[in-house]
Amino acid sequence: MAVHGLGRSLRAYFHYVTAASASPVHVEVPERRVELAFPAVAEVRVSRLLFERTYSCRDYACSRCCSRVSFWNVWRAADYPGGPGRELRVRVNGIEHRFVVEDHVHSPCAHLRSAGCAVYGREPLHCAFPLVKLKRFADRVVVTTERYSRNRYMGCPVEFRTPAPGELDHFLARRFRRWAREADWLGIDRSRLPESLQRYCIMDSAP
Ligand code: SF4
Ligand code: SF4
Image 1 (tube, protein in one colour):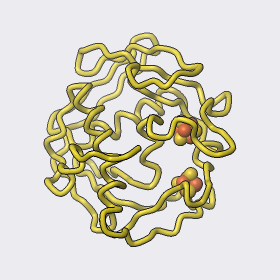
Image 2 (image 1 turned 30 degrees about the vertical axis):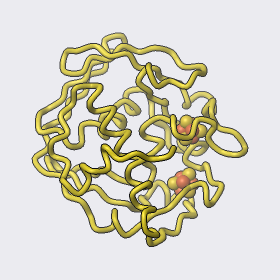
Image 3 (image 1 turned 90 degrees about the vertical axis):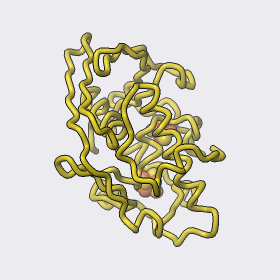
Image 4 (image 1 turned 180 degrees about the vertical axis):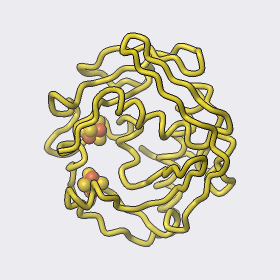
């Protein structure tokens, strides 16, 4: 089982929200003595695979990522759906923000039910992106859809499908609208996101 402590889980969260920032981002969690630095991104490239593949974990009634990977759930406090989380003050470029974090390392995720995620649509950002990847290579980022090694290791059952007309819009809007909102809330630049993805950041999407 993969285990991600609080520091690593925060790093994963900020890995997403800083992925199109033209300026560096500094993150500090004083009570945990955690400091994270994310360099400026020079370019974001979008793989054609992002537009050729879609999937839904719900088609497989699969929640292996919820039960076989242990991490901390990270929410901005205003979006927290309720549960056993606790507040955490995080400074982003010197400005303090309120988060709520839940320990999902020492106990199962509080929102996992036999039917799947009880907070689908309000799950932590990293839960919404299991096979959509924002991969960093130094100051370059590639956005793609792929089953990566952790999922192959876990036996991810997903077989990607070619999206039906309109399906991809929902698939990408659900993720990037949310992603953009989190970046904006934190005052993190996202100007490096290419035009081909910018439109999804403002598109309505059912949860
Ligand atoms: S919040 Fe939902 S998607 Fe995320 S780990 Fe818990 S049950 Fe899974
Ligand atoms: S293993 Fe694959 S299908 Fe299952 S929850 Fe993870 S990404 Fe979704």
